[in-house]
Image (tube, rainbow, N blue to C red; front, side, top):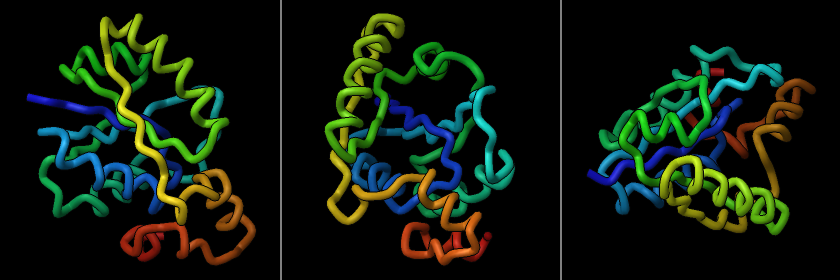
Length: 153
């Protein structure tokens, strides 16, 4: 079984994240959207809300599951039997960072492969950080969020 992990904080999940997963579905038997915990981060949406967002977005996609973890991503992948990591790239800055992490994960994760998807142009100019700031500032973030997430907020 080909299992991929798509790790992140998903605070909140955006249309860009969803697009990456949807494009990856034909390549894998199972995709785990894995919400990682970072003690250095202060989250805008609590964990239960982020899980609800993701489960709602992928309710019609049985090969996509949601999970949480609190360890190195490479170790989490080993625990789940995942041989692939999914990552989205918006620009060259993302590539430079993700390239380094991919090499580390391949070493620590004993051959864990990172599969990069280039963000579609319409999703390449924003991030969850920007979306949080729009929401925090009272703006309308619906352009960046899946419809079901907008309804749940």
